[in-house]
Length: 376
Image: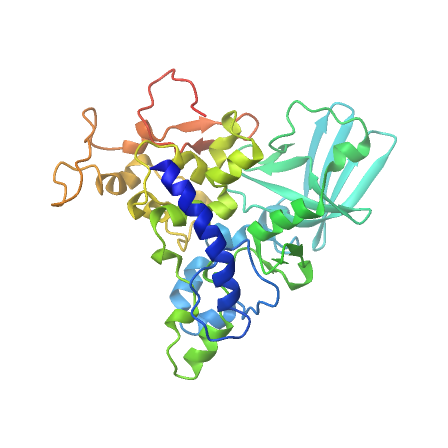
């Protein structure tokens, strides 16, 4: 089944590019596909405020969702506004983030040399942590230190543990290639990348309505004129389970194809990439009940204080398949012989990621016994 799904994704990937180009750019063609990270040049966005005209309740709810805050302007970033001064020390290097008006200044010094630059953008809404994009000598840098909610302070950014900077510039952060910077923006902001090129001047901070549903100009125009417009906007909910998880959500949250191509399967660090992890579950299939949206509502308003849901919240999702009374014609699914509640606490264990100050839910669904090694 998994090999069949992989072959299917190769075919779909070709279709995605053709259909997306055909469905945008001012035409009235139906929008059959939309991949958030594959935006063709010339795509015209309407902006989320235009969506409010017809979808006021959903738009208001989505404003509080984590994806909406995937990238924040520094002037408005709540974490940076709330922390007037943050400090960290690593060996001979001192780090400081100081708030000055609508800016946050990121400074690194070894006592002799110093680099000090305004934070360009903050990446991540802070459920676990928040990393900063910097500009230095006309290049993009990923900050070496990040803010972590659990410790309410700074620590090394995930992936930097075990490395030792040799210069103040290396301590400042990691220089990103233009392609890397484009990939970051494509997954954290809407209309920031088209034809694989970065256009920060066009960017809308965070993932807006059109980030997932596609450019809405034609859809909105037809609606205002009283013409049928349903087919002129993309609805990810119509995709199959595998398409949702691997091609759509996986375009940013890392699909199995992406992880394999990057040769980054080893170690606990891949626990952050849910589409990859769930693909390796024994029960994974094309069934929408096992897809990302089978358990998660991307429009859901989640506040930091209530983001940690107990395992029982998802029991109904598990029982959609694992029930003794399967609908007629459906294959029998084994029912747990040990427990009837808090399914995810056993079958989707939380994993401590070194240096992350956060326990990530492992989406590789399995029977996880105490002491079992982490399965890659």
